Length: 72
Ligand code: 9UX
Image 1 (tube, helix red, strand yellow):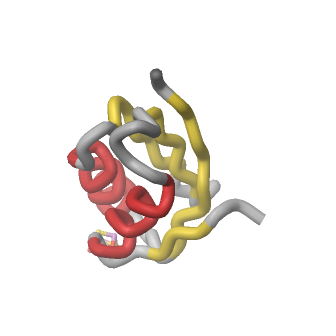
Image 2 (cartoon, rainbow, N blue to C red):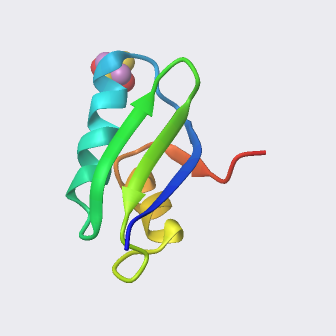
């Protein structure tokens, strides 16, 4: 099945940053859709929880050079 999660992404300063995060998340196996709202510093991801964990989504963002954390 598909689950949807939203979390905080920090360190983005321009639209190319948010595009890079979207691309990085979209490449993760099990992710079907990833959108990043730059002013809100928020990622929304549709994913298959049998294939990928939220922590792995955070790791993909961090490997791209940005910060990721659960929303406050
Ligand atoms: Mo442009 Mo966003 O170099 O870091 S991609 S500011």
